[in-house]
Structures are given as C-alpha cells and as structure tokens.
Length: 207
Image (cartoon, rainbow, N blue to C red; front, top):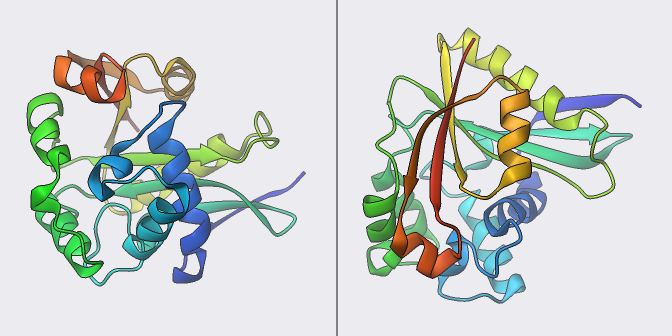
C-alpha cells in the first residue's frame, strides 16, 4: 500500500475541515470550534472551518500549512505545521473576521490565556494530526510526520512542539512514539469545566 504525501491546496478545504473537527472534538461533546462558532451543529461548524482554511489571513489552520496523505488517490490523513511567529492570535482573529465571526466575543481566547502555554516562536508547531477511520496502523501519521520534519529542517528549524489534552492517551502515545517528550503539563479547572479534560500537555522533539 503506497502512501503519497502532498501539500494541501484550497480545493482540499472540505477534507481539512473534517480533519480539524475530528482532531479538536477528539471524543468530547464539543471542541474549540464549537466554542468559537457558538454552535455544535456539525454542518455549520464544518462550513465555518472550511471557510477558515481559505481566508486571506494565513492563520494556523490555513490550507497552506497542511500536508495531506493519500492512498490510491483517496485522502486519508492530515498534518498541520505552522510558525507561531507568523500565525499569531491576531492573524487568527483577522481570519475569523473575514468569515464574519467576531473572535473577541469568544470565551475561547480568554480560556487559552489562562490554560494555554506561551509558545516558543523559534519552534515549529504541529497540530491536527489525523487519519481516517479504517486506515489506522498503516503508517500514515509516520509518513506525514517524516515529511513535515524534513520540510522543517529545510526552513532551518531544529525543534518542533505540539499541545495535547491531558487524557488523550492515544494521541500522547503516538507523539511519544514519534520521539516527542513531555515538557510541561498544566491542569486547569476552567478547561475541565468546558471540555471535560483536566488540561493540556506541551510536547517537544529535537531533530
């Protein structure tokens, strides 16, 4: 089974929206985009995320930050890598504004100021590492990560980081298999109240 890794294009918006929602919900009732868009209706949330991947402002979830894995021409996985010095919170708010959402009104940003981590702007951040059900354990995520790290080296990066929820055991285990080590753990009651998870873990890898 041959896995093809390629850069995402604007035409992949629908698939990327599906992967982003899958990643942020992660077996919870709601994820961050339900909070930002103030709805848990799948169709509405997917529609908003799809638009968000194609805004002029290149936020962390812009299609240009993604790699897509394909098997026999079928899209089966995604991985996002972005530079936090470029894809800032201000850029994300700008992208939300483009699709008609006032991010300043969302409790998400206030929550992350309390519960999130201050990211090192000299590192590359990985996010939305996902694969379709039925295609697990065939090496998709490993292939995506390998290509992303190769691209990161070409950009001059030597450290990559990711943030995972405490309790997301499968995701944590997978990142650790790929060489990531736990840097910090932050338990946060407001995060637990909204998402039902105790808080967040910061992981890092040198390459």
